[in-house]
Image (cartoon, rainbow over all chains, first blue to last red):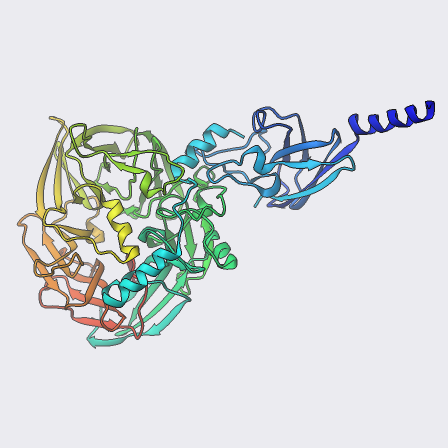
Length: 136
Length: 495
């Protein structure tokens, strides 16, 4: 009985504390200037407002990989952009049009502007997930 | 990511979702109508590139040598569907080379991102002016750049122009696509109108506007392609601003009274709601910007009209005068019907070309009628921004029961007299441009060069008139053995 309880507890810990890694491969980055920035969201109300996690890597021309570790399994969506001029923000021109390359998970786009959380949503299982997007 | 800002700009671009789909029904209707009305061929789809030699009737003048660069929408159909609006088609760049009395033609689709992706997909994906296939959301305005409105030789290069996004550079000789032109970092993905004006000193003025936005961006680019100055002025409730006009000291814009109402199930064209009728009719605004400060000098009001194209402007003491082709009421939707093969009714009061005088002291704008319903006004390049006397215009002759541009006119703006040539029945005229002789002594010292479609034979013909004797008929016609897509605008680059 004690052994079963321990085993159950171990399983529960594995499930809830989790050690799921999310590996994001970001393709078509134009240059090695600046950084590739990722913001991760875990719910529709917070989508594009309040990231629950984030990561940045020095940009490499072509393919870039960002790993976000130890995520509880569940539904997520992310936004990624290439901060080529390393000013820490997604630049827009005087008309408000984005001038740095970007993408959302699933390569989702809304019919006008950013997608909804549902369109960009994917599930990270306990075993972790590798996904890829293109910022082209 | 600033979602609010992004949404605002996307809304301004009309990147709306919905059921305004390119569809098989539009395609069916057009092709049915085309069987009964061969003149609709000017709105027909084109597949593939073109190259050929023209057969010449008459004689190309020995001193008329160079390349006539032109552009217009060529692809309207894909995957069994047809666009809903003439402005939607993909840019088909054309060059007519006039050398030693011979004329050769080349036409190629501009390889925009949209054209390339949709060709590979075998169907329309992205929203355009009057159609929204709703299959793919664009990342920015240049994702849906159609590069379909004008072809501009400038500083040894050639640009295919749209208005909602960047210029697209093409090779001057073979028209292969070089790519999106970013004049400077701050001009990346900015709207760049298809109607830049080149001052006599070679400096280019242009602007960018997004309907539904509140900002007009202004650009001054040196003859060497370097950006000399940019600016932004605030103009509330912008609708489609397609063209502008420049005098020695001013940039002048007309803002037609449209309300932009975002409706996700409507196309961009349909989000323009005409606000120029009824008791609450709004005026057409005239926004005058000073060239030296890039600030608004004065705003005038005129009775509600729609305007696409201007002739020229000049300052005269405390006034500025300019000519413009005015249209009555909501002209944007009428153009859409052509895609279904429906003809627009010819009405006597559809519009007229006017000379407008802005009186800075009194704040009054006066409208004088120059010519009846007409379009595609052009002047000699050497008079841009200074006093001009001649204006080239296309019109529909009184005898024609249909609203088809069948006549080319050279109008004297002081006397009101027009030197007019009417093409034969079945011909449809396109924009004609004025080309000066070297060291021209007057605005009549040169040629009027254009294109017309012979719809009976489905062939496209380049036309050359002596600017001083238009009514005498063309001195030369250069006929292609095929039909080239109808163009909106072009420019002649003398050799």
